Image (cartoon, rainbow, N blue to C red; front, side):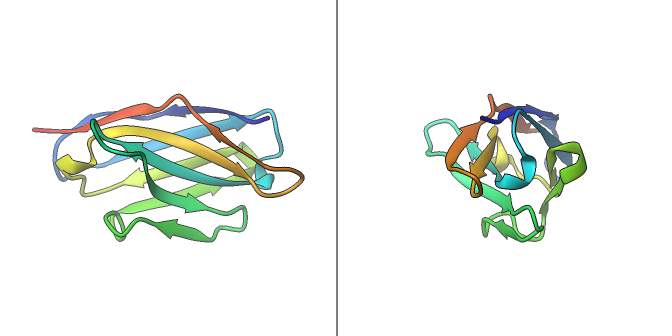
Amino acid sequence: QVQLVESGGGLVQPGGSLRLSCAASGSIFSDYVMGWYRQAPGKQRELVAAITSGGITNYADSVKGRFIISRANAKNTVYLQMNSLKPEATAVYYCNAERVRRGSGSYWGQGTQVTVSS
């Protein structure tokens, strides 16, 4: 079973940038598709971006062109670079690991708060 620890959240002004990190441990990192989800108050959790071990990415339409997901397989870490942030990006951001090899399962980090406000 993989353990996930997020970091990098905080308060940023509209138009600013933040980079989130998610460190994975306890399992073979390349067995997982890694993703970032977010949940705003009163809303359902939604996919922001995902990346396979081979680097294939998928983004929500609302973040295309502004957010970049990447992974460093040697460091067991996935990143989310968020640029041109808007107030509607305010949410708790969760790292997710979806096992696609040598088994199955979906695992979550504890979440990190991102607040976009002036």
